[in-house]
Amino acid sequence: MTPATVEDGHSEPGRTTPARAHRGLFRRRTPAPAAARGHLPTTVARAAAERVPHPTDPLAELRAWPVPPARGWAVRGGGRDHHVGTATVWQGTTTQLAGLFPFVGGSGSRVRGVPIGHDLHTHEPVGLHPGGWLEAGLTTNTGLWCQAQPGVGKSAIAKRLGLGLCAMGWTMFVAADIKGEYSPLVDRLGGTVIKVGRGHDAINPLDPGPLRQLLGTVAAGRQRDALRESIRARQTALLEGLLLLELDRPPTPAERNLVSRALDLASVSSPDGQPTIPEVRTVLDQAPQALLDAARVGGDIQGYFDLMRQVLSALDLLVDGPLRGLFDRRSTARLDPSSPATSLDISSLDEETDQIVAAAMLCSWAWGSGMIEARQAGAGRNILWIQDEAWRALRAGPGLVERSDRMTRLNRHKGVASLYLTHSMDDLEALPTAEDRAKARGIAARCAIHIYGGLPATELGSLAVDLSSREADMLASWQSAGTWVPGQRHPGRGLYLLKAGQRAGLPVRMRLTARELELYNTDGAFQSTAGAA
Image 1 (tube, one colour):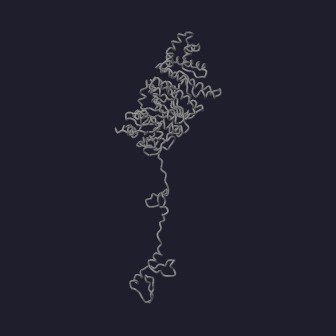
Image 2 (cartoon, rainbow, N blue to C red):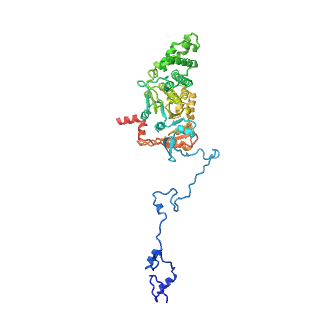
Image 3 (cartoon, rainbow, N blue to C red):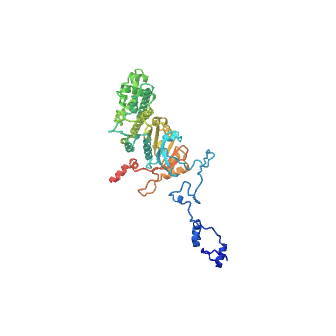
């Protein structure tokens, strides 16, 4: 009898167990492992262990990574893909896409310039740079219009923009800081704060300002002649504006002619080329032959004085009236075009009449226009011109809007960005004439960049740009006063809608740093009063 193979690995001649023989008949025979070749295994379990390898995880090293790879885990449902596809861009006209335009949400904006905040919808960072947006083709000019309720941060965004642009090499010029709220920031930037008022610095409205220093560095020729004519034109325009405040009407052509000629004579006789209003009045009082010839009255001095009597009375008021001590002497301060920031603080005149405030603003604008001319001649930097509460000055007399627009027109070719701040379009309706109101609305419409904070629903229809229904609802919700629980933050504080053209607006939340909260605080008077109480 042949030997039989049994499960315990032993072979006994002549002995066969039926059950074992039966199982052995149907069992697949496999070759012994290489390690066991040459001898039989002692047990079936050991043989199975030697025959079957231990399983290994081919992704063990990949799973040990702290983060998934770029294409996800290589497992079912892991998001793995062999490539990352690109999106398809579709374009169409507003007629073809009438159901989608105006768009209910913006497409996002990468940081371009000063970081303003984060988009409320996409949480992307949003930057604002009037010069950068102009270069990128997003806007056609560098004018900015900022409108919001009081207390929601209108001046805060102006200061954030000014601070950021100063860090980028610009200079910030606050033409007439009627509340003195920009002075701490200008001081912090190492700039120049000129406090104007009785007992403070004096401004000579006819001071050439930075252009006088530039004139001394330019050789004789066309450029020097152009600077002289620029100085004369600005002096004449400012003097006419001050006369308008006193006369309550624009000067007549004959009066303008004689005043400009008297200004020329006073400039020639002035030792430093800086005539004052009293010196111009003295020339008009003396009635030299040159003025009599210009008046075309022959030798009739009485006819000359009849022609100039109202102008002389207005100059008397500028020198000896309510404005005495403000604009009737030489300047005691100087503007530096290379300064990182400059503020003309007229807060000491805040309690004066609109006429006095308007005169101070006109003089401040004239000085600022001198900085612009100096910058254009290559002696300065790009300028952010901030005009806050400007409408208080413009409502003081008819025609002031036109003169203001001449001095502060959107000067994109001169490297100037003008920022206008107002509470309401109703401020424009307070201007004295329909012509002034139309010109003021034109200033708002010409601004390429509009910044809106919380506004009442009744105000939204009069804005200078079109809003979608979603944008209008958003602005109206930001102006809500919230609850009567004290200590609550105003719901619209730090929220702004940036609009440029017909694009969907960018709703932005701006958060201030601790130092900015200190520098931008406009409620310090109430806080100090509460602390004292």
